[in-house]
Image (cartoon, rainbow, N blue to C red):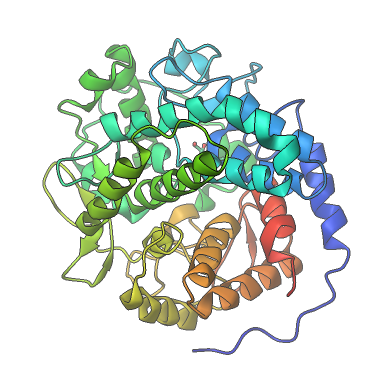
Length: 422
Ligand code: 2M8
């Protein structure tokens, strides 16, 4: 194990800068991930934003999650993007998605970390939060039930039907399923992301053709859950979704019991998910992994999602040595892919870079389960954000800033976790 980075600099001015970013990215009731590149409300970005706001404005923190749920569909799904106001700066916008929710939105979801974080807002001030939490509770349960009904395979693992659904857009986890898509009828479209950020840090055209093809396919099926799942060439069991949903159900169950709310079948659902986690264990590699549900092929990818097992509530002793190996190879936090994997690309988004919010879930989860390296993950995250700024993600080998600037979740993670010493 390499030692932690050189003695920490004085980062005492960073809290104010982080608060400023949240305030600047506030569009009135919801926060954009960053100005320009992502001009709408994103699902799990908002959940992290709420934790950041909770450090200085708890009312605004609740509002972030309430606004997110105002976009919830009748079937319980909470979209991954909510298009509150049109903005030509992002592609694909509402017309491409063609969805009919209460507010214009995308037609897929994202990891439900908001379920857990709502319970933290409650814990921050139970008296002030009780009524707001109770109002959200049935909506949150309905979202969790939607996952169990429409995103669970026969082995009990939660899968995604689009790389954007997992939030780890171009991770190697999707390569096998993506290779089965022939997007030749996708038609002309113009990307906007590469007008904001260098193309070397973004997914390729190969990826984008398939992202858009998958959206077009589901739109043609009118976003009907059953039809979209049936025969879908992209169905990948995903540790991100599985472990975050597990954590969400556990937190919701505990808070619901404490608040005397109707918890329904949640205890049984949680037990099923705990059992289903076994399906994500890749016995050949000896770590948690994703697999293509259509052919059973493992990704053989030791990713940052592999280490969400602790956040999900598992005791996973074998994962500790993998974390040590990865931290040894990459000094600036947990990379999105192990650096010793030949597919590793230090700058390209979810194929190598380190992400503050993933580090937070890994570090916190590990510390909660008594894994000493959890604190090491926090220190390194503090170091990389403190030195290189509140950017979207970082090169895990050099710490260099990458992606969008003045990024909401990086600022929030600083306030809620990484920047806190002790
Ligand atoms: C990235 O994803 C969006 C599509 O959802 C994109 O690249 O256009 C991912 O990093 C995702 O996890 C994140 O929620 C989103 C906004 O920060 O950006």
